[in-house]
Length: 398
Image (cartoon, rainbow, N blue to C red; front, side, top):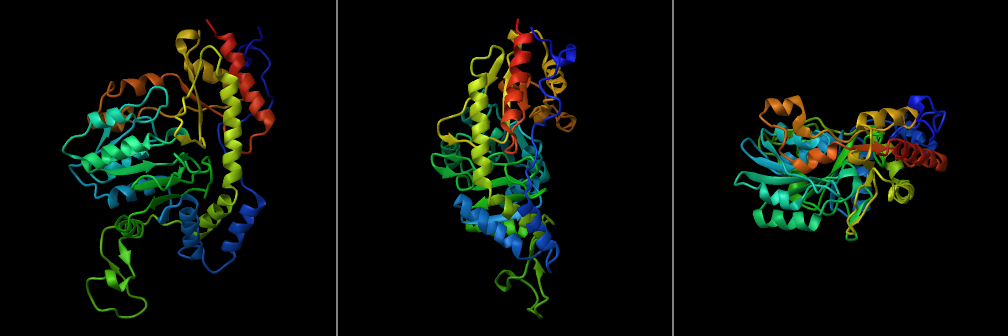
């Protein structure tokens, strides 16, 4: 049997491939350059254009672009009226922002467990964690697979909760034919460089609710309005006049970021198609590999994956996850782990959260590992990644 490179064998490839990266074209660069050479690099027309493109792509009535996915989540919580003493249910298998945004509002994140096959939040666990203080559910489309939106919608309607979809991973996915962005009360996107489309950094909130939209606009621009109909105080003194009518934040996106986002959106269908092709190749390659568990996809979700996660069945392998991870790196296939359960972090421990809250999430976390997935991957990159996983799974098999 061929030795892993970490034990002296030859690696499957000579150069390193990373788990994710952006794909920037000359057209993207030219779009940004055009804005940088123009009169507006912020608070200009490209921001509005980006919002219109996102609304058109998703079918949502309104879009508000912001400077990060985290800011998008915070603004959604503000618009939902989350305040001190409230509770918001979310998942622990996510980036910390999905829960931190609740803390920003002085409220308490409550962690519901996940489905151990799909890794998305379990609607039954959501229901079990509802109290008279629950105000919203932040459901994360983990890896890009849409949550069980119909069931979550029904729960939210039954208890009068706001349904916020953390869709940082899932732009381009759909649920029963409906695009993500047009499903929940508010949907939050991220445009970080490893996401399906990028603005460098950036995010957006999508909604069909006019009242939420007004609150989102205020939340991301200092609570300031130029709209005379919204003003409360002094008479309008001139074109320079504005009023701050609520406490907001400076979460604006720049015009050159918006220009990059617009250019990237021109290629989103290409990006989604390539991601689906890579995922299909991985699914076929790993479906019968002992020691490797493939994430289950629900039929309602037409998924554009941001991450491809293999789960190591450590009962069938002689190695630890760290040993497998290091061995993949030695094969020059760089992986990552998404995510450490949020309530395991010191900040959350100091707030009183303890291990054991979500047994399924904690068990799944022990074996998960993200392998390379991004549209610019070549066919050889895909083949080498598959070869590395199979090589190590065979070597470490009990």
